[in-house]
Length: 254
Image (cartoon, rainbow, N blue to C red; front, side):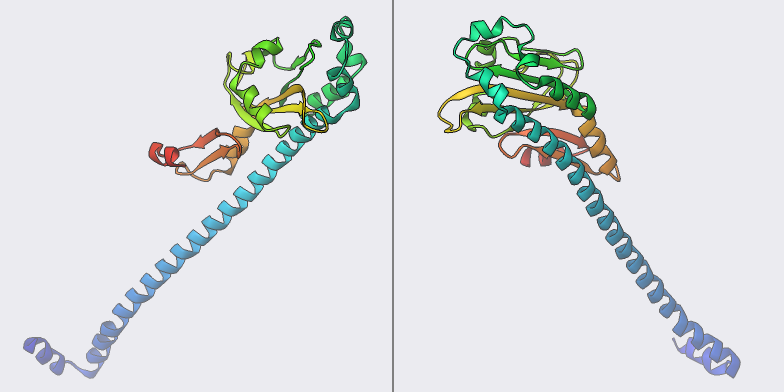
């Protein structure tokens, strides 16, 4: 330190000015650089968070539109007078003799037009509790379980029945299961028990299956990095979809 002070004293005024400028400016520049880096980091994090919120709101809006469309279609099946006339028929054998009873009595032609227009709706079924031939429609070469007896033995049916007319979303993997005898692809299915007005008697059981791929594509478009994931849950049931990367422990905890 003595040698340094001696050298400084022996410097010319010009060199002293330059030296002290470096002494002051270098730490100041370091502080400015650090502050600018912290500011840019915070700014980028805020922008990232803003984009995340924007993507989440956009995804939620898209999912809400699809869910509302499917729930409204399901509700229309449940309250339609022509469909209820089939579900409450006193002579189900006589009604079932008409092989096109669902097209001739109920508005299923219009329903099928809606399904074709939506695109993502792949299957629709109505199982009357009175024994009338069920309406089973698959747009993707899937096949429903054909009888009410088999359907009524499933856990999904019992869950829907317990909800007294409220809809329930369930995940249906491709292949056979509690809804399909053979499904060509993974689906999300809205199931609903149809009750009379007093909710004292179950009249039928309806299902609407939508393409899981459609929902997965919407979720993937909302992800910004490989570290993000979207988890979709049914409020009255269990998990429906996991899109993206998530740690197994965190997934189980959620």
